[in-house]
Length: 308
Image (cartoon, rainbow, N blue to C red; front, side, top):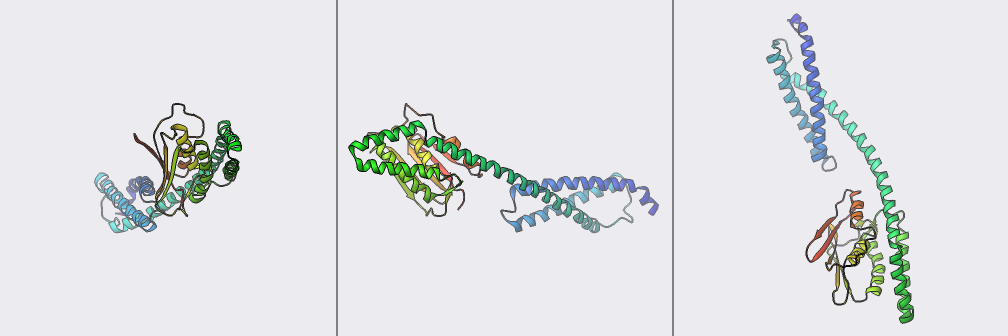
């Protein structure tokens, strides 16, 4: 019997290598599946249990394949061979380290990718801040602001003083965002008051603005100037007159901060500025999706919170 075992040793060894190779492939596919549908961040206990269940299933399938290969294909006698339980124990002992190695490789790769993505995100945020600042100090915006201020100086000096302070506060807020990738919704709404004051001085009674706070927004954060840019787009792309009021509404709930306005397209649309596409791109850096809904009457943008 020993001579038979040794004479078939090369066959058994080849079969073992095939099984180990298949085990590595199966473990790798199992890891990808678990990371996609049941990552550690979702539930660690369920992830470990699912991993063990997957390893057990892989071992059972491969042991069945190994036995079929040895006994039915190569026709090696079962006499003197280890039992199924012993093979299963050896299979699990080999399979668990393989999966752990793949886990470590995946972890270090994820860490490297996270570092690289973080650097890219930092550069994108700096670019966003630069573009935002440029959009706010563009000649068109500055011309309109100074034109309104010039008129107010002679007509209503008190409002001219308030307008100057609001304009100063708006630019001071923009300049303060150099090292702030996100701000609280409370800060954003506070800064938005100054911007809306400028718009009221310019458009007078041609628009309405309301904020509906369904939940408290103290712990919610968004990308700076998101609300201001969306409101600026509303004025840019729509008519705002006393006869055709532009109605802007912000709703704050537990999942989104929603900005909506009625649609009354302007024939002379300024194509400058950052635009909605750039805002969407910024939120994608945080793995967040901005939802845009365009109906016949309303243009709606739902902004997800960066963190809460």
